[in-house]
Image (cartoon, rainbow, N blue to C red; front, side, top):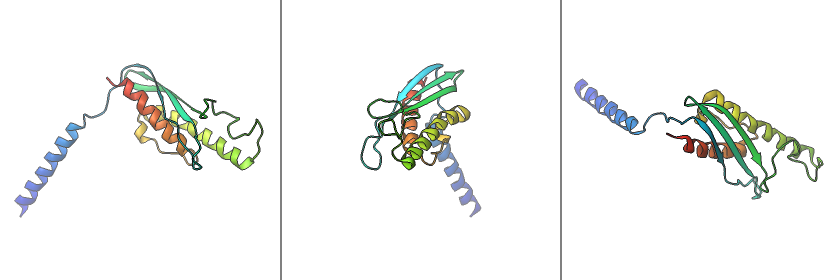
Length: 147
């Protein structure tokens, strides 16, 4: 019985080794600055919630800098006015949520530089649409940087 278990274990290990070898391992990136843009995402009410853009700098094959900005569907940068209506805070709760989402979205770029791996970044509560925009934009930018 032990021989059969051992043989089965070897088959499993060999299969896993071949599967992992086919994955190609970690990707390498050419030095430079690369940009990516997400598609327009819709929020819960079906309205456009804008898009995100990243700029990623790679030096010696590592991500050394990243900026991430989010924009309204019309192209306006989401900034301290995000969540206001006609320049005024019409609904404090809505404004606070919008600003929380904006603050969370700024963390994604920092986390990418810290980890060097965008797959290791988790969504921040209140900024999940921004997270999806970030992931899509980073994927586009890094695909341009692949060697």
